[in-house]
Image 1 (cartoon, one colour):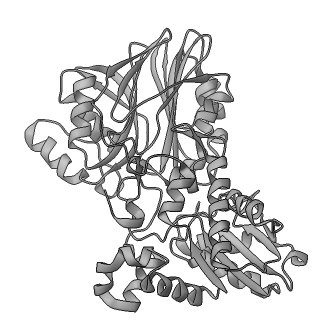
Image 2 (cartoon, one colour; image 1 turned 180 degrees about the vertical axis):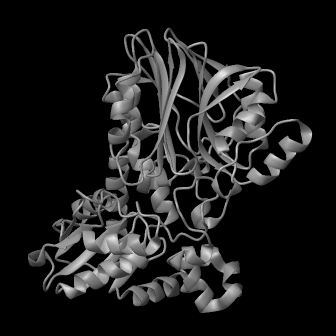
Length: 474
C-alpha cells in the first residue's frame, strides 16, 4: 500500500520528514522517496527498500539536504515523489491509492492532448504522473484535483509540494484512508499516521474530510475546497490489520479497537458455548496479538505466546516478492515455546484469514510441537472480494481467497449467489463454510468475527465504513 508525510515550517524540516516518513514503513516495503525544496530548488531521492529499511537508505541523503518544506513517502507501487514542471509551476507529487482505470485514462489524455508519459518497466505508467497529468489539465490545483477525483476509478489521496513553500493535500473523495494535519510552534505537517508526528512534537490539529483539499504553509492551513456532505467509506482494515497500534483514525484508536474486537468475539463464543475448555488464548503475531488480548481479558483464559517470530533478519514475512520464498520465510521465523504448546488446548486469534497458506503451516507447526487442540478465530468476517480501492492485499484473483475457493468447491459458480449466507455464521451455508475451512486447516474449530461485531468494535456509523472485501457492497 503506502503512506506519506510532509512538513512546511519556519525552520529546517528535513529530519522531521525523514523520521515521519520512516514511521510509515509498516505500510509498504518496496520503495521510499523524499523531495525537498531547498535554496537551490527541488532535491529528490528515491530508493528501493525491499531488503533495507527506509532510514538506512536515506541517512546519507539527508545529511546533504536542508529545507523548510519537504515531503516523503513509502510506496508499494511506483517511484515517488515525482517532480513535475507545468503551467501550475514546478512541484513534487506523491499519492496513496489505486487507479483501476489507469490504461483508459492514459489513452484519453494522450488522445486529447500532446502529453506523454515516461515509461516504466513492463510499459506501466507511474500513477503519480498520471494523477499530475489530470491535475495539469485544469487551470488551478483545486480544479485539477477535483477533476482527478472525478475521473479516477479507485481511490487517491494526494500530497503536493509546490515551489512556493506550500503543501497542498487532498483526501480521497470517499475518505478511504486518513489525511491528518499536525502543528508545532514553527509550522505544520501532513501525515497518514497520527503517531508519526506526535513523536516529533506536533499536536493534532485537523483531519481532512472526504475529498477535502487543504493548503498548508508555515503560518497556517486553509481549506481550498470543502466538498458537500458525501458518502464516507473509510477502510475497516485500518483498525483490524494494517493501521499501527498507536494511531487514531476518525478519533478511534487502533489498539483499543482491537481489544474491544477480541472481547466481542469471546462473548460470542461464550454465548454459543464454543471452545470454553482452553488452556491459553494466543495471538498470531503481530496484529493478531491485541485482538487476542481482548479475547483473553473477556474470557478470563490466560494469554500466552506459544511461539515468537524471529525478526532481526526478516522483519515482515511478506517482504520477499516470490511467494515460495515468503512462505519459507514465514515458516523459518516461527520459534516455538514448547512448554506452552505440548499437550495444550490453544485458541488463536488472527487479524484475518486471506489465502490460508501460512495459517495451515502454522497449525501444522503447532501440532508438530505437541499441541492437543488448535482453535482459530478471525478478527474480521470471511474475505470474499479482493480490494479494488487499496492495494494492501497482493491477491490477483478472488479464487486465491480461501473463503471463495471453498464456496466454489461446495457449490461451484452457483455459490456466488449466496455470498451473504456464507458470511452469516447462523445460516447452514455459513456453518458449512466454517466447518469445511476448519477441516482443510486441521483446526478443532474456526469462527469469524461477524460484520455487526466488527462495526460495533470500531464504533463508527456502519454507513461510513467500507465493507467491500466482505460483502461486495460499494
